[in-house]
Image (cartoon, rainbow, N blue to C red; front, side, top):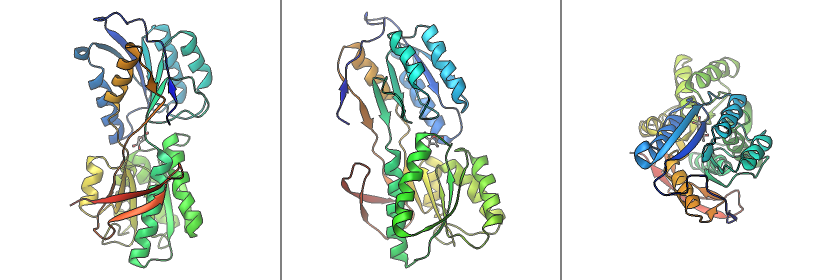
Length: 323
Ligand code: GYE
């Protein structure tokens, strides 16, 4: 991070004017997403002086580009995008730039264009590394030396899926864990359940770790394992790892059904509103803002873990035991 950008505010600089913001949201696939939507709607409420044009893109990346083009047509003051996939953005972001409309990206990242003013979200690669670092330490503490892993990935092509996959895989490669399979569960409960049902048939008796790339997939995977007679969690045969740490996810950590849950902080609306306020005042804004992301675990056996994050820094993370 550290790089800073200055951008022209929209047309609503005169104080007292309503600021129009177009938000192209991913969809409504998960608890995380519900929290994200509410956070943006709260931050850009009419009472706060905003007119929010909200589009739920239902996980359709073409519809999301169309939504952004419609915001340009509508001549909104600012455009906020949570990109479903990380590529395919340069053309439409150039159109936003040509129209003089500043773009703010939240949550997922864009890989093929830098034509946005600011991004606020999570370091997904670090989340993946965190899950690997934790599993390594946990397996050592428990004396488990043969790890056979099934991964249920998030929506393919999203930066959240890419980072969580790559970060975990780095540990799997280094430690010689076997990744038996890795399939897309679309970040939904239904997707997680379907993938896990097929895993339970194809890999019966062969796996002892399941990594779900979000909590909703983990809920579906638990149902499928239960139906197949596979035990999981602190008292079970399968170590269950998840991401997001939404409320229901943390309840399953508390009950010991999920062994470890790596937080992804969803409430980015107020950060986004602060960025727009700064732009309105002609201030410089940070190009990147990262959320803090605690690690939640079910068992009080490892106080902290030191690992190397994606920036190459040694970081010590204290584990939060959910009691
Ligand atoms: O983990 C998942 C949601 O982009 C980080 O999207 C977000 C992910 C989150 O559907 O639950």
